Each structure stands twice: as structure tokens, then as C-alpha cells.
Length: 159
Image (cartoon, rainbow, N blue to C red; front, top):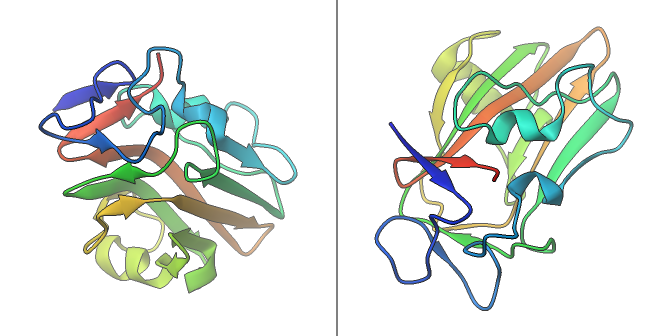
């Protein structure tokens, strides 16, 4: 599997490309700079984990917290893609709002496709532009962890 570093994304190149004036393709950009957690991360589960070029992650919010990757309003801008996948696990009493992409709820779909508490690649069909994603940890009830993102067959990686 290929790894996409911030220097590997070029507007108009094959694979992922940057949209309208954003900085996805510059060597100064770090994908995890556009990620935040409302009440912090579980120890050892910070945002850079999901941009390490592998599926070893994870990025998981602290109890009763939400992680937000806001590419559209961050330093990078929206990412134009032909295909987009996430390596994710949703476990416990997951509902749709526990994992969203571009405002669309995917929590239940992830559990249906992969199984409750099972990590794996989940294809985000119909997405041509990635703007944002959120995932939530309900203390004692449900948890979502994101390990990696893949755009057009290439795992996204911080540099």
C-alpha cells in the first residue's frame, strides 16, 4: 500500500489533489494540525497517530469528548478525491452520530460493515471532496477510534 505524504499531494496529479487554493500539497502542511478534541485524547491516542503512514493508530477522544478533523476550515482546505476510505472501529452502543464525514452519519454503517468493535477499512462511497469528520467517545457506552485515512489508494501521512 502506498503512503501519501504532504509532499506527495499535487494539484492536478494522479491520485489525490488539492482543491481551490488550499495547501494540501505544500511541504509545510501537517494533516494532524487540523484535528482537535473537545476534551482531549486518550493517552497515547493523539491526532498524529492516524497520520503515521500505517493503520497502527489510533486517534481516540477522551471520555465524553469529540474529535474533529476540519480540513475545509483548517490550514489545508478540502481534499478532492476519487475514492476515500477510513480505517476505523466503532464499538459499544454506537449510533450514527458517533462517526460522521462531511456531516453524514456513518456510525451504524461502520458497525454493519465491519462488526461491533472490529477495526477495518470502511469505504466512504460517493465522496468526491473531504471537508470534515467527527467521532465521539461516550464514556462507558460507545467508542470510535480512527487509525488511518486513505485517499485514492494512498494512506495519508504527516511529514
